[in-house]
Image 1 (cartoon, helix red, strand yellow):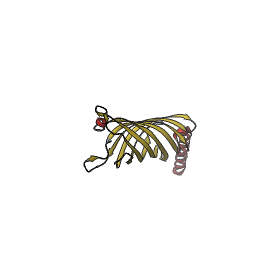
Image 2: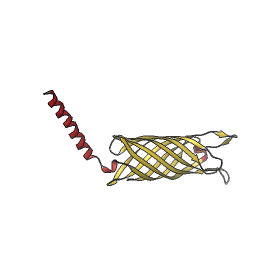
Image 3: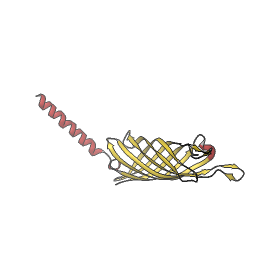
Image 4: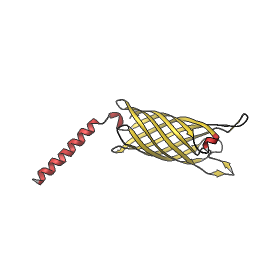
Length: 184
């Protein structure tokens, strides 16, 4: 009798998990590649030097557990310098951020996540900085395996100084990303 009850319970668990798996939106599962437009709103000391950052990014996602995805991203950000005195402007700064992290879906479309990586400075005399980036967002299914994503993140860059010159002038910003993700 105990064995029959145990087998019935196990069969019930498999049946429930199979039904819930069938209800999952195909756009929210599987591997995805996203192409996005990024905007960076400088905060703290970065706001004293720069008006706005903008650029683009590619992001790869793959499920590693239920509601948990691994992410890898690469992009390009360009920051426009503010006017210092008269027509003299602070020089623009650009970098290539490379990050990896995790994204956890709290509900079907809403996620929180974080990434770590490096921002490789492409401006003259710039160096590579460590990047940390917690964020949140939403993905809206638009087709069989495609979503439109709107995300917000805080991004911090840490670097050093060399010969008393500022090597990593960007220290922190609030990032906004609008992307199209398609299944691969």
